[in-house]
Image (tube, rainbow, N blue to C red; front, side):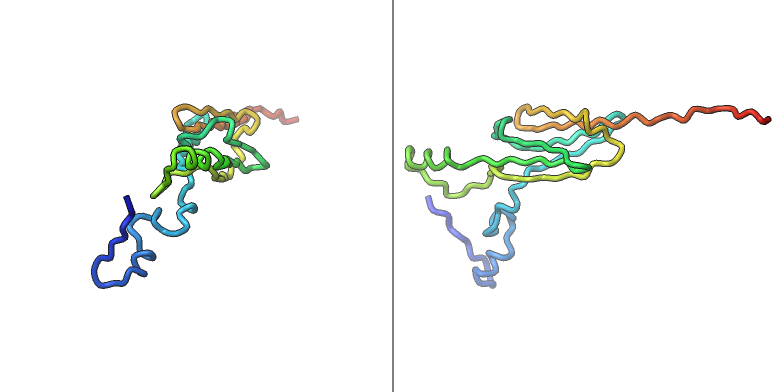
Length: 145
């Protein structure tokens, strides 16, 4: 099966490459292969959910440096190259590719960096960032002398 580019209408095909309906059709679609993220906040903590299906837990790195949370992954494509030679198959189009990505998030001062934990289940990386307990001001009476 071959992929056929369709020329629709008045504009030459050069404009089809610039104004694509699907952003993954642009030549540098690797820029768009950043995993989607959900960020939730409740009274006790922040929760970051990152959609990284198909990655192994060992290939994901989470670092905290100063007030910056960094999530990254880099997987070599050796497995894909061996599959091409064994099956004699070739990808006509390959859109899901989270083999290499980096995401960074600035953490607010109100979080407890020492108690950050992460879980990976069913392709979703969930990072829980607890908030610091606010110190309550103690009401104190001052004697007048």
